[in-house]
Image 1 (cartoon, rainbow, N blue to C red):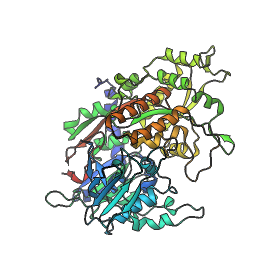
Image 2: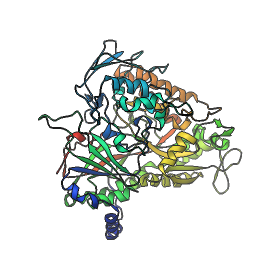
Image 3: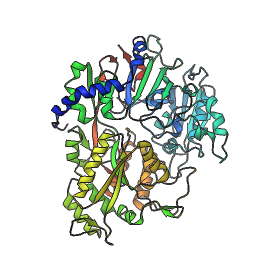
Image 4: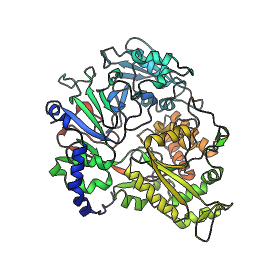
Length: 589
């Protein structure tokens, strides 16, 4: 771990009386006080409203589905092992092409209806495998070069069989997708709107009454107030019981307060309004000194899963006769030396020291540092140490030039200038973007930094494709194939060269680079390979290619830190699962 760096404690404490007054007046938790004394509840904060209550259409994290749905199996974030969920057991055929699951007996939906094999078959065949529904879940199910999808069939009332056309290493893990209720959703999949699209695409939006959202997880929606809170109530039909036969989960109610910023979350936590909070590096020193006094503990899960990066829009296509990206800028972005120069020009160690207060590590790969498939720099992963001189040399070798004011110009004399966007709700990303703007100015590039609302940003990336450079992050895990929809040239999250999604206008002239196709093919090959060592070598080649061509320029991975009230019992914190991965076992005093 890096050493901690001091910050302005005096200024923080001078502001505390005022900030406490603001926080206490803004929490709006007084209405819960009487009931909270009688009902066990857990309160956390989230930065933005949910975008949908329909799992298949969600691209947001965090989301409600971690509490409301389960799949056939789950991954234990402490051990990385696959464990039973809705399925009590499974068997894999000798040729590795079939998995037979046996459901638990007596499963029910939150409305009391039976959860059966028919729901499993419906969820996969009618939703995830249905090409008329634009779900990212489908990308992780595709198999082989042909990108075929598995077949799912009912064997009897308790057993369901999954079959793939060829060996598929992530096969078992891909069956952990949430199971959805056929009795509530089938009609919306079958019926169409005036444009011929399934009504499912507009089903279970955030305006849907919570009682209509049927779930199978430990909690169900009770209430949602825009810009205020989401309330979950214990699902009385959840399948899990403890060893003594007591119904789980134990905590009756979960409240997610929707807060305007991480600063507000901090104030609410310190004033007692929240039970746990992710600890940003800028708050660590302050909170660490108050652990005992505040009756909470800071847990450290090591480097966070996932990645944070900037990415340039490499899409060279046009829509309705208009280029998606200014052709002048598109030439810069599609020059690999330009992207490499940008990587050399970003001082990531200073970013760790300043923005992350020493509580972070450099990220050089699309694969999470904690994954067994991660290729470390000492194992041959290319890295870009801060070197502005090297950046300038790369730029001039690629035909760029400097004027008398040391501004960077391209070969035609155009000043190199682009817009960098990130989500305005995230202070850490804003600080990272501000440093990037400063760092790139040192090599003559002018960056116009424009923080925007997360919903607007997502619309640009997935719909209008009207953007030049963005700073965001992707969640990660131990299995690299979970990111295949980012790297497949046909993937729904292939944002740096996005194809149009279902129902969107066509793109003319979209080009796929040879290295881009190679990475896409390697993801397929790695999923086909059953030998563990061979899989590692394939993912190592993927990581070398992503670092050479830099469609995403990786930055810094923070440590995964959370402050949890001592009254919350049973927490087994991990970077992958967070505080509440075992929510059914948690209790509050």
